[in-house]
Length: 114
Image (cartoon, rainbow, N blue to C red; front, side):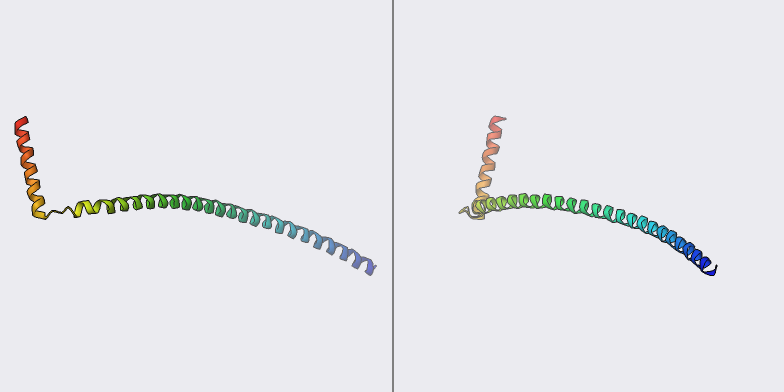
């Protein structure tokens, strides 16, 4: 009789332990599923942010290349025009006198036309 009661008790304890283990396993799987879903969402957000950053980088790089080209062209033009502006072969006084003559001629033309 004692052995039978021990056996019944052992069966009940085993069933209770199995039920508890099943409940613990279900809770673990639920929590693991939640954690996995959160991790996958975070991964998707990081991937989207990375793609957005790469797109912005490519756009900025293209803009930089374009602006560099414009700058290079402008500098070439400046270097081509610089001698014409600086080295006229005339002194400052000569340029002032020539300008004054031109202004006087324009005033005279204005008087004739007016």
